[in-house]
Image 1 (cartoon, rainbow, N blue to C red):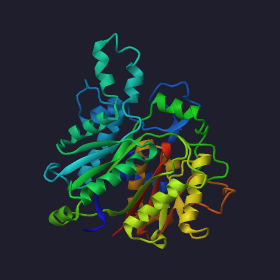
Image 2: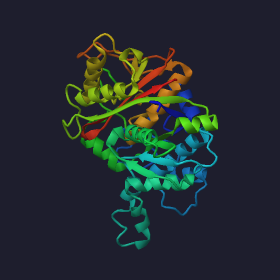
Image 3: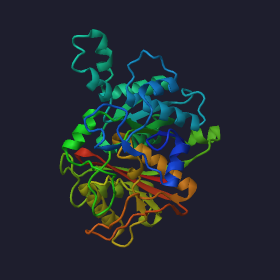
Image 4: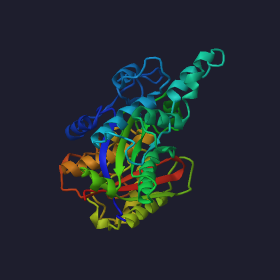
Length: 399
């Protein structure tokens, strides 16, 4: 059986665009989506910037043509937008024609609604339905129901590596003959709970995030959803499908170091990249571009840089950039977002810039690509690392 899994569709909504085309235009023109908070109430409005999608829940409901009286969370709404585009992009007219599944990921889940009604729902039974929408699996079921999917539905929540693990799980299900095609990715919305939590950890910047910069202060949170459609060789051949790219490698490891911090030697990241190479059969010389996790936190960028040097060697690290300066860190959706960006990089033969970079880090001699660069790209390595030490790497290939 082929080692590669075909990618036939993709969909995305983020702070830099409401679909794939809009996201690409923003990436190409260097237009970021980091702004002041406008879409939810918080005492941090005006002092903390985020990658916010400027569509209200009501606007999302109308665009999706859902009934006004619903308990659909913002996380679910964003996921519906992106998953619908991915399915349409893949040219799927009958979603249940083959053994089809949905593996979605989230970390925020329905917190945006829970935090609004939690203190009052016990005295107002009619508000119970909003609390029922809190759990992570609810968003996956809502997306599947919206798509009309009757097959397997599963949810992954491994912090910021979640969508990468959803993509990996989908690939394994196809390779083992459990499913013929899988819609995989992630969705997360902004909420007061998330913003306050990250602010308490003191890893938010008071300005714009600066990945891999010596003077980086921390991340900007973002909200987004992105899904890609994975299909088996058999379905691709039978339907004569257009293939956007291939998922050629993947790996997951845990450095078991700390609840939130990555290990000083990047052990989890190193093992995840090593495993992805093993699965793909590629060598380190085959990688043309790395979409780094690059959160702009002091710990992550140092740990990830050390891991890349351990894998590739001091002077052989491929050209790399973090696209989180465009969208903010979208948590469980991040690897889905960056999967779409990796595919766009290959399709259009460009490396997207690492915005806001000024000063090389003192600890090593690594400089990201800071301006849009044309380059023929056959293989992209994409890293995603989460709290709890969960580290995942994906490799996307043109053919």
